[in-house]
Length: 609
Ligand code: M6R
Image (cartoon, rainbow, N blue to C red; front, side, top):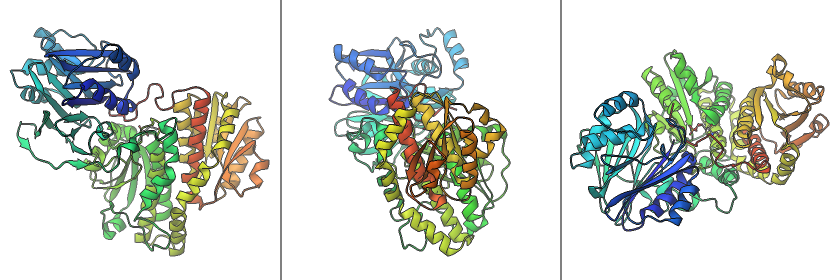
């Protein structure tokens, strides 16, 4: 978590760093800081609080010069404070360093460094690396960073500058993402392509144990022993506008509204009406390999886990393969047994989530075939997988995941249909109906978005409630979990997602006039049972909002409010169902005056375990 930016060139580094950090603020917003080579001296400014506090300070008292490095922090070791903010200094304040990641052996290293006289000014693990670089510095910053990295266990992405080498920035990566952006007479370092995209579309994506020596005119890449390495720059496939708000008040709102277009992009060339088979370019398993799969295990965190719940359901239902879903952190806690012919599918927007990545490595080590559903191209999870099918969401910046979720569900569904085609587990006509339903999804999602005004009115009606239950059954269980997560993470309303059948085993005790229920009640296999659960809530004076098909007149007599969605095959419904629930969470949070794009305590990409 934490975002890093570095700039070297003819412009004022603080301006480039601040602009980059604004685009990385989704990674953390507890504090921010910069270090700049200004008139031959290293000048540092760091402030607790959101980036704007630092921006105001730099406007009041600018710092000239370059190179410069900047950082936005999500606190792990040491509470948010000016002292714990990055950059950290060492070597008589000649060396400045910013870090994303965690140094697991920092306590031991700190003791050794203190014994040799290093004075620590923060509680962070990061300051240890700064002092290590200082310890090994003998006039060659690259060599010192490579040497210091050897002592560190854990994860890091680093940007380092030194007063004695004013024309150089060093970048280093182990497990935390880092790119080097290539300009004309200027170059950039950043945690994410988003930060550099307005300046360039050419980046080197650093791999683990890679280092970069960055000057105005040159970028040289090195391996862990200091050996030169060559690689081709990656060309960022989206334009800078995609990373802006494009007239929307919040990124989350923009991203919710982008869904029809993103679904079209994700379907392009893969599914269309009349196509006889789904074609998934990233799925590199042969038909024989697909036939041999005996177990599918979806693994992910947070919202992506809820997409995995849907994936588990459709894979089992359509392809007839025993399927499971696991939270990546819990999977690892359990030392799972992996049988032959297990396919693990890791789901992740960022492709960098530490728990998911570590889960992947463990599953691969135990012999599972690894597939992944990922949004960020060439991210760690994609690179460690045997195959990846990408969601084509473009950049997702709002901390609350929206478009990535619907696309993860969509890709999971396409995989399940493809597996069913190959394994012959469902009649051709049923698969054809599903493919046609999938091809109609952009229009279905567009129709739900047109209903936003009704959602605003509902959000206004329910904004004051502090407790809420989301109920789903069968294919909609994950939708209920995701609906609750969305509401709680941005509005701080206590919301629980439950399997409706579990109500009578405990949660029904919560039903009271001051707790409302959102019931996913699309007509299908479990509709009647869901109506029964709705009656149980109503009988206890609970208010109910139902998400139902628009032609379902009957539902209106059972509930207080209905959110209509267009009729689609039941198995596909979770995709359009989620869109109004995202809008509902958004507008409740807006009515409650919360910071929607940067909810408290959260960061977009969780690169710590
Ligand atoms: O980047 P990933 O999809 O791996 O992220 C997983 C979760 O951290 C993420 O979905 C998180 O739960 C979001 N805040 C949900 O909105």
